[in-house]
Length: 123
Image (tube, rainbow, N blue to C red; front, side):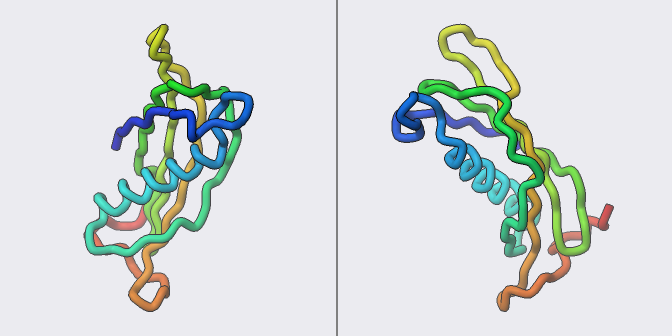
C-alpha cells in the first residue's frame, strides 16, 4: 500500500523539525489500515516495531510517501515493512527518511490471539 502525508506546523518541534512521535503514530495508523484491508474481519493490535532510527530530518511542508509491504506471515501475526520517503516540494527530490518493520497480532473479541482470518498460510 502507498499513501502520503503532508507535514504541517502542528507536527513540528520548536526547531521546525517533525516530532519523531508523529512519524511513529502515522506508521502505526497506516500499518493498521493496511493490515485491516488485507485481512477483513480480523481484529488487530500492534505488538511492536523492530527499529526506530531516524535517518533524515524532516521539515514542515515536506510530503511524506509511506510504502507498506507484507514481509512475514505467521499463524496469528503479520509483519509489514514500512519505508518513509520525504519529497521536497521545492526541489522534487525523494530521499529515504525512515524504515521499520511493524508487527500486528490478530485477536478474538476477548483479546486472545487467534488465527489470521484468510486462507493465507504462515510463512
